[in-house]
Image (cartoon, rainbow, N blue to C red; front, side, top):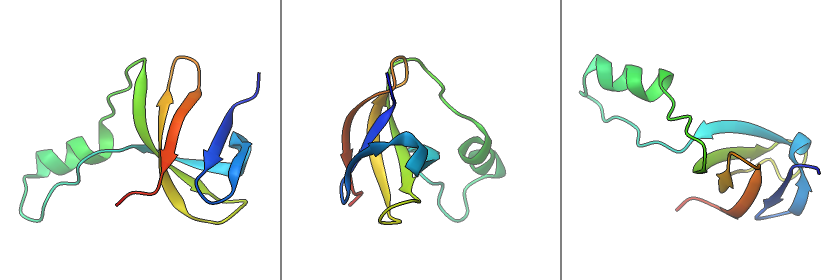
Length: 83
């Protein structure tokens, strides 16, 4: 079974056309502690199950979008552009 992503612009494509950008996380604000920035940059939840992620369509429209993916099966549940 192949791993497919549905780009909001280009439609369903092979995951090999995309670059994984990591989990969607809240960015620390200017003035937050060094620990808050360390946690943001270096720590990952890495849990089995549904996860919101960033993806970049490098071989297509060249746009960043978000996806909800089940990490246990690589099933992409939904994709969208962030607001």
